[in-house]
Image 1 (tube, rainbow, N blue to C red):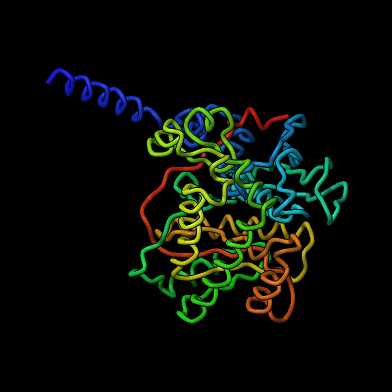
Image 2 (cartoon, rainbow, N blue to C red):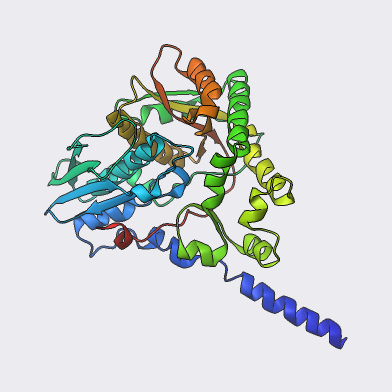
Length: 372
């Protein structure tokens, strides 16, 4: 009896500890966005920092030194050189940031005048030159963008989808109609098209995992447990009681994730591939070329699609692997372009659609950490 009581007391203490594992500080930007006493630029930026972006790198830096102006730069320490060697995906993430800033500004009757790459750009890599100079212009006629209401609810739903619940054509039509920055949106819920894209995206993801340097890039960005997430609220977060508990028991670490013979590797790989295999529909964005300006436009329209999906109660997750431009991915890149953009152009984004339960938002750096 005495021994059992000690075990139960210890278990109770452990449970109480695990219940505190939510990284509240890293999630705070989702709760403090839009504080009423904020200056208009800062208020809009407090929503912009919640935008979707690759590997949650949050690659934005802003300078507020000029009145009524935001100068946007890329943080070159937050690139993805292995999977995104020309920084195309990072640029798309910056486009998402600009769009959410514009949507948030509209609530206070500000129109944004966006000048992209005013000092030029390099197609091979982003650099220290400004990505955009954004002027806030008061305009009482602009009206609030209805997608604003979805910013705090938006997620990239990285869970297996319900295989019994199809995505209706009406949803696909609404998502396609939400774009407004010149990209071409395509989508399908046709079972044969979905099956083919499931296979393509599965194979591309598997290749990224099985290519040592590209897989290591993701593993290096793992944030395991509350302490790591709050110290670095970016990258790929593995938080909550389960992951904290596994880490405490020595059953989850970067070393184990990199060991392709380990249980942790096998389970992680299976979980990732299960997502691609449960797509119920797909949506993609194409542009006629692949300029930096077109990449920004793709990001702006992807943000709108993501917010529209949220409004419709539909889950969306980007599946970018087949669009990556590292050499080993060449064959998958050609196949997906042949299927989705047969007349030429660049497929900038590809995502899966479906339905699943709710998930926590991704951690974020606070706004002040992103102001130069």
